[in-house]
Length: 323
Image (tube, rainbow, N blue to C red; front, top):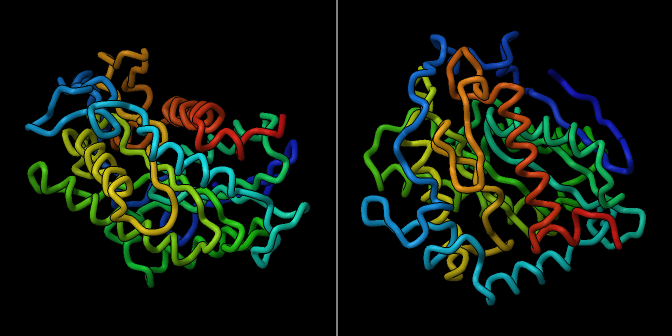
């Protein structure tokens, strides 16, 4: 449902589901289908965060190089420096004690459903009083669409920022979560295609938002309950490799602009779960397609994002209130 800008505990929240892409059910017509299948409670795949030095089709696991789940010291130092550069900015992008630190979501339907729940939960938290949280994710806008710098998606992002009383010059951190609708290529070609799209999107972000310092990227949630071809397994799982390879490119200096790192890793093997206890049940997806999160699924993702931003070294300094 459309959201008016909301201010609570010093945090500005704004966003809406727009562009005429949403039907009364809360999902665009081309993203509806038969009821979700609850039979596939496990895909039999190992989450990247648990795979470690193991491999999937000869590609090593872990979120970062070497099978680890944390950035190496040198790359972490760059992330910390980028986080320290975040400061309140006036509308024209100049430092201002009364300015804003805009945290913007970029992505598709799942992203906006999850981020709107994150906004609601953030409103009840004590956070950086300069923080403005803007939902820029839109239904139907997959990676193939938003990689076009002239696509209508970017006009909608500008509209969302303006609705929140913010400008692109105040955007300093982004949560990026994208996928490709109805992928058909075999691995690793599918993940390589998404990786290329993500690189193009990061380049657009760097060009549109000159004060952008940090981009946190997440891959898909569990897709085993899907009843459509939107983004089922194993594509949802394999999107994690696209993010991993994008981050590797950034570490290798092949991605210009902001520091790029993992946001929360969202995939888990259905009810089999992963080592940290996260499970994904059929109740966590919408019955229409088994692909979009239900309210309980959105709460899980929002909780993971909130915990990540509160505790991760390259985010906690600007997200939390000053000590």
